[in-house]
Length: 114
Image 1: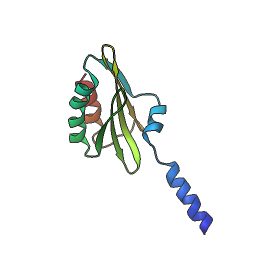
Image 2: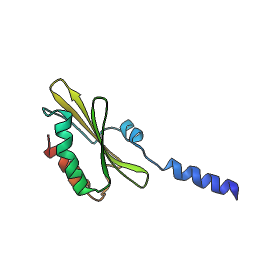
Image 3: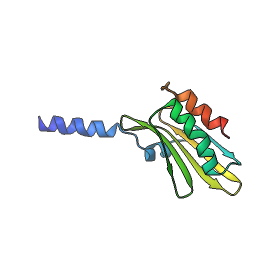
Image 4: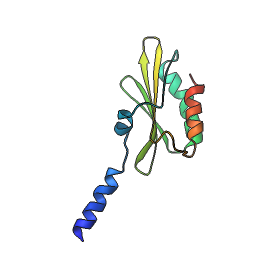
């Protein structure tokens, strides 16, 4: 019985997808913008919050990271990195082909704020 419970716990943890896991995948979308990282992040983030209440934003060493995570899995991650002419924008999505609540609004926000 203990072995079964241990195997179940390992299987549940293996199904978790964190930001690092998303970053290893090919990006769903990437672009550059003339906006600095803070200005771009402040354009996208409120739209992400409207689409998904579990959106969060954090400052990184070179810019900002926006993240949408639910049930211990990162669904959407947007890295905004300062460049000499503005910002580099990279969107990673877990299962980009799937239809998740708010996904079209999330992608639309990334593109509309460029």
